[in-house]
Length: 500
Image (cartoon, rainbow, N blue to C red):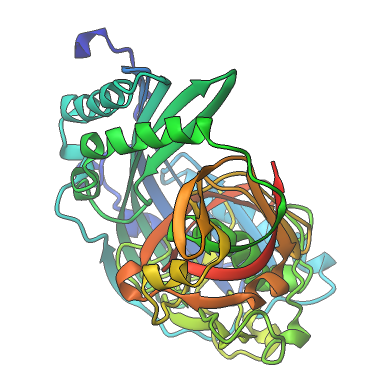
């Protein structure tokens, strides 16, 4: 019964936009920029953000936690004589705005006095726009009982499988309402949604445990994503595969052809393609958190990153994807561009500060912050593997000895994104063009350009799926970035596999 659930609700820190007392957000922004202008700074902007998050988690047929959290505040950036300054506050008031603006200016002055190289920003047109996530069902209007009933039913069906000993399930939703205003005249309003759901079955056999998960992607859409996922209908299959996985034989180490599904590829692309393409890493500006990049600037346009089948495209304009926010936190319009074309590395993720360092006249719009209290930094775009011409059956049919891998698992990658190893959520042996029984403990490893160079086929667009991340760590203090990686299944030849 719902009355038995302990609901954790954080205190409201800010009124909804339509009930805020005067001044308006726009008036607060105008006050901030006027305060900075007195200093003679060459650029400034303000982001005012109100976030609402709901997370519901279940364990073993029961609802374990319900969390409703709201967070709000504003951050002001200032560029003064080539030095950045940033200050933020959770108190939105006539008194606080000038104080925070002055603090940002003071920090910028200090930065400018110590800077060896002055910051310059590439040009960007002035934008005035309002961006709203496409959706049919607002997740925050769906009754709590409907959501908890769905999770309970999924867990109940999972645990009807005799050898499944644990179950879990979760739903997550977030809304960000944001105003961005810059001294250059851009004025951008955002109402952004994101939704995700999942459940897991854990089986036990002969002292071992194995889990199998069903996950919807994180997407900027509404609750229709959850309703259409059919959790209860998928539960028996997931439970049966958890049991098969725990009883499966361990993989025999060796070289295998691999066929990787879209969800699995999203993590492989993220770590071995996404992070190396962040220009601040390539320039050596980002090194302390997760390292730099082997894709140094001298490689652009000449370096063979993969085979001719490998076309990696950054697309921050595709509806529902996580980085498709209309504009980034530099006020730059979202775009689509090539990262790798016909196997050759050709493009980076950039912001207005780094773009000029490689001769680009415009930023790619990849500057994003995870909070009002965070400084925007270069983040991975929605990088995806372009579809090929093969069917999924074609990929399998041409494999004599291989493994088909679904979903995310463990991973490790070095500080330059060069040497890596990946696991997965489920594995099937492929013999003589046919998928056989499941395997367990599969880990494959390789070197990034050699691995992508072994790709000899990608499935067609009918197999394309989108999966994303909301926990991509970067920066100090650390931030969590959001991006989507789309792909169709792809085949890789003679990859080294070990027993995990």
